[in-house]
Image (cartoon, rainbow, N blue to C red; front, side):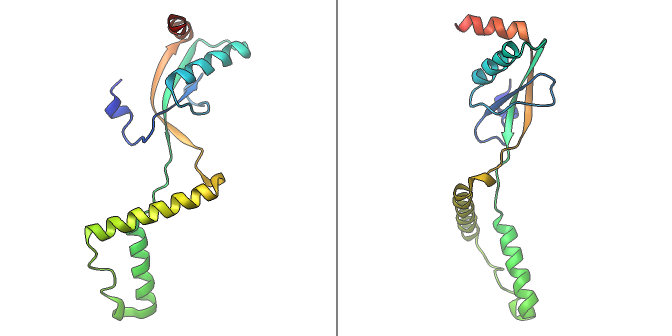
Length: 144
């Protein structure tokens, strides 16, 4: 697996499993945890499963855009003050933009931590490996 390509845009690698390649489990911190739970699930529910799909889960991360905020402020100024506001926020340096971006992101994270029920719990699978159940059992037994 080429880690650079498969984990691109993923801050912390999380894992999920599926028995059909479409509906995936909860996310796990390690590949091993996902495999163990998949095998437990098969055993516990006596499912007739031959294949396990193991994927990297890319969890949505909310990003606040300083550019979007600046544009909104400029539009609001124009709507209320017309041509007098033409140069408002026009000459921001890269450093000033970066500072604003950082402050906005910190504020959003603080808000998200205060109201954790708004933290995203959804993800998409960006890479999938397909395994025969028997091979996973053999792999697990090799570590036991």
